[in-house]
Image (cartoon, rainbow, N blue to C red; front, side, top):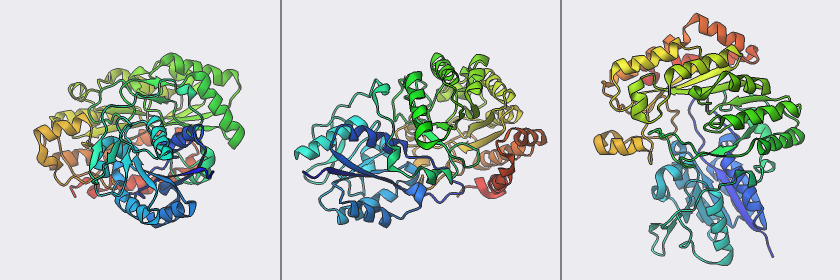
Length: 474
């Protein structure tokens, strides 16, 4: 009997300047999980990494003679789904076409509109996709799978009632299916970390976040679940053997939520003699850092981390649900920098109700901090977030015509704040210049940047961000 053929693709070739690219962890985890449960041949294509066209992807799926085709996309590149699914339907009329990834989690059933997809899965994909493949293999429909979006017999889009509980034991999951991609492609591209291209592997060791940030999606839910320190180190040792590398990029939303897990992981790294270089591009939560944790992370090999400030206003911190302790955040940043960790800051300007003096607070906190680099994002109301719901209730006109396509979160033309457009965008321009034109900051950056000989390659990015026109309304 012929093995089931599953074709998975990450679609949406972004054209913004300097887009970061990381291995498609969602697809790699999904493929590894499904291979353990079905007689399955799997192929993965990542348009972000290889620059292929939609035609190339569909041709690859057709040549693979795929039975099931899964497309994953970010909201910023979701427009590609319509073309990809229609062409896949024409090339593979009998295939089951399923959507997943962050865009489905953000948009729900709307993600299927204008596409030729048969179904869509929001949130964690493993358990739902397992039931989808089971139904496909048995020749039954998808109506009994909780939480799945599907087409009915009339072509309409239906949301199945109920939901599938998230996976509790993350240690039970197999290692991501890195054998299905050419990891070397990613070594030549800029990753999520603000460091030069290098030979690395990405890990995702936890799911869910307990904080209630209004601008954030709930892809993995609001309850923190994590792999044990032993499981993390076992996976790291596997990659050291297989790829002969020691550079690790953790993509967790909040790796340091469980302090003891961090300490246990670092202790195991030391005791097993692993010589690692570790980066945290999605951020360590700065106000949860202690000197003990920072020392342990650095001794285990940490050399880069982002830290998310978002806003320097205590009132706005409460309003948005992040509730960051700003003084402790600054202490955490300083501890990292004192240990030589290249530290990047995330900030946002333009929250609802935010006044000019509160924007100034954010700029002051970031510019007076020890951060080496920072990004000043525009607050963006993505679908299926509390922020989007608030704007929909209070200022629905701001959502009209809002285009998420191909954006990098610094220039989206929407102003949710309490100040005029010219004040918001002038504040952003001022923030970029004040931050990066600080001579002492540039000295610290040159001192702590890994492989400083590569710093000149970042000059075009810096000049673009300093440019006057970057934040003008489009």
